[in-house]
Image 1 (tube, rainbow, N blue to C red):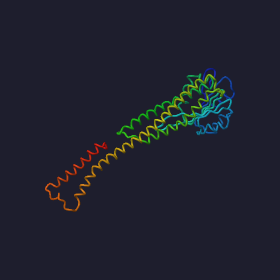
Image 2 (cartoon, rainbow, N blue to C red):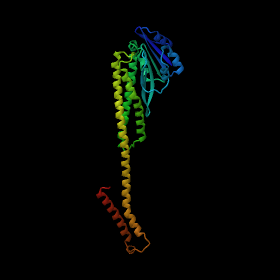
Image 3 (cartoon, rainbow, N blue to C red):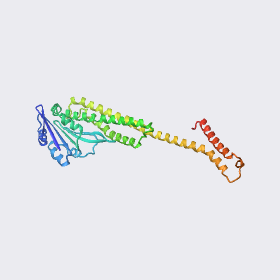
Length: 318
């Protein structure tokens, strides 16, 4: 699906994509936003060909294999960023491609994204996002995109807190697979957030013509939040590693406690085994002729068991 908006004379209207592209090529006092959702290579090339976009850019736009980056082509820049949300037990990343010209903004994505949807619904109420050129609209999309990373950080923080509590809770044993999935999810986020932070930082420099100087402070604010997200991910990575190590240590301690109890039981039973083996030999023992010989044998076994327990207790082994 292709949708387009034209801003002119202080108003914004949705227009056919062909008209929007033609107005962007003609120039004049108007700004254009063209949004492509799930379009194939041939359709994207046919629609954007009049803008003179480099073939490599058109090829990269329809392939979801790009890391966050920004390429400068003089009159326009090519920007790749990723939105994120948490699905079940792992993050879901979606690539968004931007082509930012002097009077037009082209976005490409596969499937609905919250930042693009927010721009679509906000643009009719805030025509200034496109009236002053494509850079303010780009900033708005980036601002919403980064804001949606913050709930992910809250979710990861709560997940780590829950795992830390379960480590010491014997009634609800922790699932180490849950820790591994969390670590993998954070690793996937870090592989995107790090380059994305550097990409946003590059937009704050004065080397890109489509980004006017007055927009750079706002982009630096976006960069600051991306840097904060990176710091949080680094902190969470260390905490999750600590939780995993603590889980393994607690599991080892529990195993040691079980082995300790079994050892005490075996040690207590050892003298009983010796006594029963002695009296179980096929020889005539003098105790067999006693009237209370069986009481003597039981008392001897009881005394040996109690004596062993007392000895282990005094040594602090039980």
